[in-house]
Length: 389
Image (cartoon, rainbow, N blue to C red; front, side, top):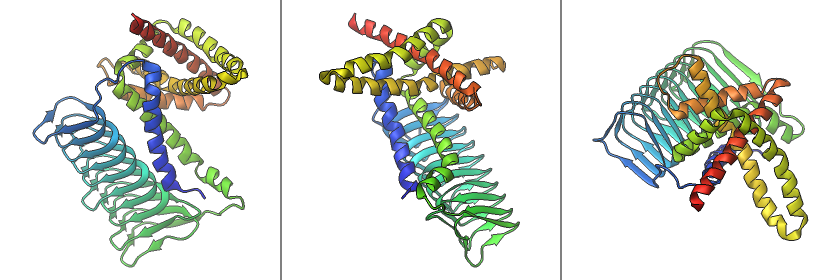
C-alpha cells in the first residue's frame, strides 16, 4: 500500500544522503564551510545572505537578507527580512519572515508571520495557530495541518488535510484517493471557493464557513492499486523529483562552492572539449564496466564504479543548471552578481522544462549531460593531480 507520509520522509532523507555520498566523488576535496552544529545567537545580525549546512542548526539571530540552510535538525527563531530556503529532516520556523518560505523536510512546522508565499513539502506539514501567511500556501505532504491564517489561496495535496482558520482566497486540494480525508474544523473560514478531489466527501464541522462554491470531484479507485499509486501521484512525483534535484544541488553548492564554480567555468571556457570528452566517458564507461564484470573478482569493483557513474550522470543536471542560470541572467542584463544557489535553481528549472519538450527534449538532455560530464571528469582529474603532488 502506498504511504505518502513515508514516501515524502524517505524522499527528504534520501536526497540528503545521496548528495553527501556523491560530494566526495565529484570534488575530491574536504567539505568547505561546513560544521556539524551551528548556532547563531539573538545578538548577531547577519548583513548578507546566511548560507550554511550542518547536522543541527539553530538560527536565533537577525537576517537582513536570505537564509539558506540544509541540515538534519533546523530551528529558525530569529527574524528574516529576505526569503527562507531550507532542506532538512526536522524544520521549525518561529521567526517572522518578510519574504517567502520554501521548505522540503520530513517534519515541517511554521509558526510565524510570513510576508509573502509559503511552499512546504514533507511527511508532516503544520502551519501553527500563531502563523499568519500574507499571500499563498502551496503544500504537498502526507499530513497537512493549516491552523494559521492565510491571506491568499491554499493549493496542494496529501493524505490527511486539516483546515482550521481563515483563508482569504480559494482552496484547491487533491486528497489521497485510498486513505486520505479532508476536515474543516469550526474555525475554518474560506472566503473563496473550496475545490477538492477525494474518494470521500470532506468532513465539514458545524461552524465552518465557505464563502464561495464547494466543488467536490470524486476520485475513483482503480482495480489495480499500483496504477492508482503512479497515476494520482505522477504530478506530485514530477514536482518532488525536481525538488530532490534542487535539494541535492543546494547541499553540494553549500558544501563545495569552489568545486561547483570550477566545473561551471570549465564548461564555459572549454565547451567543445567538455562535450567531446563527455561523449567518450558516457559511451566507454559502460563498456569498460562490462569487461571488468566478466571476471568474478571484478564484479564488486564494477558495481561500485557503476554507482559512481550513475550518480555522476544525475549530478550533471546541477552543473548544467549553474551555467544555464548564469547565461540566462547575463542575457537578461543582470549585472549584479547573483548567489550561486539562485542561479542553480533558475537553471535547473529551465533545463527540466527544456528536457520535457517532445523530441528536442531528448537531444537537449543528451548534449547537456555530455557537456557537464566531460567538465566534471576533467576537474576531478585535475584535483587528483594536485593531491598527488
